[in-house]
Image (cartoon, rainbow, N blue to C red; front, side):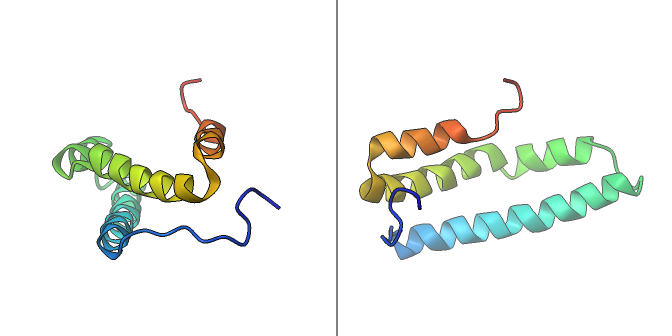
Length: 92
């Protein structure tokens, strides 16, 4: 069992819709772009341009913020910070 088991955290409906919409776009786009790269139909510049044109970094940061704000209300800042620190870091 982890902290907060059995509890619920809440997002406003507009936040949940935005996070769901963005995540769906990213999953579909990444799949399409990476497939094109894998089959030699595009190079990695396509992924870079998608990130830039669609403001992916900022949109992912907003989604992360919405989720962590909701979690923090239920499990507290210390537990929320601990979860954030457990994530994979590519350049560590």
